[in-house]
Length: 53
Image (cartoon, rainbow, N blue to C red; front, side, top):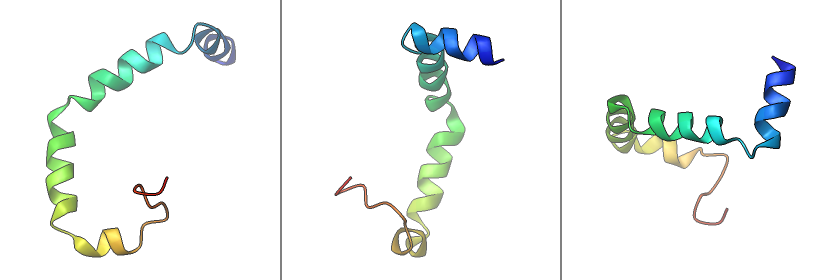
């Protein structure tokens, strides 16, 4: 595992970034976004303010 991970990082994470892009297109991501929008108390206790960071 470690050897593969190090090689992946040496080639600028091409496989990892491709996998992340594929996963972000999954339908569950849309469902999750809509559900989080219905729960305003989640935004109130965020650890990171994305408008600033």
